[in-house]
Length: 179
Image (cartoon, rainbow, N blue to C red; front, top):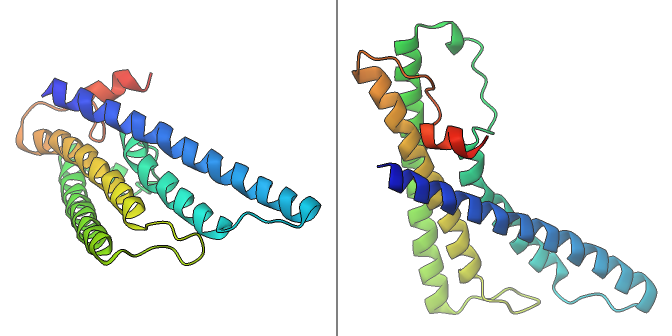
């Protein structure tokens, strides 16, 4: 089990680095387009599309690492007052719902990308194939689903065991990875 968690953690980190490159590339592209437009009156064709693709990739590929680091916003001021077991039950229910939602999203994105590959859909200005971007967004959501699955394991153990866990949200391997 630890090996799988370690692989998911490394995958999340790698996708996060790619996401950072996508966001940095989008910034460089926007700046270059502004300079080229202002100085040489020659904008970069398809900048709007490329920035949209890069931003979508940056967000989707960073989701798994954000979940590993527990970096999402959670408003728990009411739930924190509940007994630990009830907190674990709430985490199990909400984590299970989130897992189902993201798995379904990843699945449908894969199907949509497959349909777009067959249809040959491309962006309107730059004529870039859209399906690889959608596949990568689906990959980011699938990686998030894996992280959520292992977080559910902690809640499951908390609900169905007599031993309290130190953390309801984070796997012990991720505790080491984020320090």
